[in-house]
Length: 309
Ligand SMILES: Cc1ncc(COP(=O)(O)O)c(C=O)c1O
Image 1 (cartoon, rainbow, N blue to C red):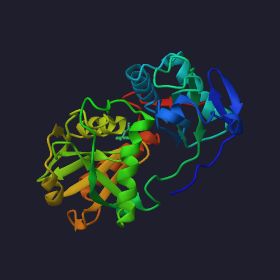
Image 2: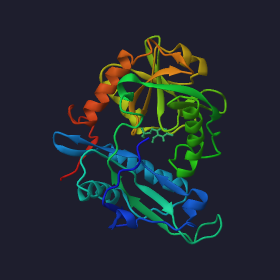
Image 3: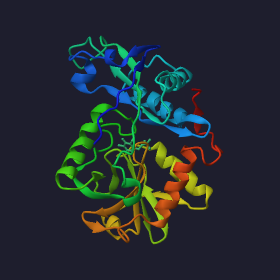
């Protein structure tokens, strides 16, 4: 996995600080207890210059995550929008990744963190294909994880909170150790939930399904984009309950996520999916998604926020 490629500046609560100066104390509440919510957003290099994909929806989810975790986020969506646009242009980036973070800093010793300030950062930095250079074409080998996703009303999984990613890390570590590239998590009732940082779709006898929002998965913005773009070309995607064994009999499977984009799954638990190569529906939706994000298709849904260089 590629290390972070540093940029020069990070937006912090209304000003820019040098990349190296965006530091936290060891005893910040976010470090001790994981109290940090964040977003992962891609900016694509389009023919009209850099354009951040679905920025408003990502920032709305950040606001919702902060509200869920009682973080006193002091910036509204227009302010955060400008912060993201400025973070790209100030760092002279084109295609890149943004990772806005709202966290509790240093102050309180215990869980009742009133004494810790809420700090907001917007880093932007270059980032290529998440699951490896040829993952978008060749697909990835996935396994069903021995770790389950959390039960609803334990962790609020519609929020994107750093501490919740301990579970994703366990899944990912186990998968890699056993020779897989990705893991698929099951819900506490044993139904298919999602990947470590991505949603999952499957094509089953000509129909496309994705797990219904059941409190065990993040409602992905890429998931929403893919459902909308599929609908535009007459493919209906139905959210439903998906038993594990549907994975093994699927004609096609793919992951969606801001980082993963639309990545085919070539096998699950070493059983090839379909022909073991990316299937036609996966490739059609992947192309439509990337063409839209990269500015090849017109912005009919108003999803691109342009950055003036
Ligand atoms: C656990 C999890 N599920 C799904 C997703 C996909 O969400 P999105 O498409 O909004 O990036 C992500 C990525 O943010 C994630 O971390």
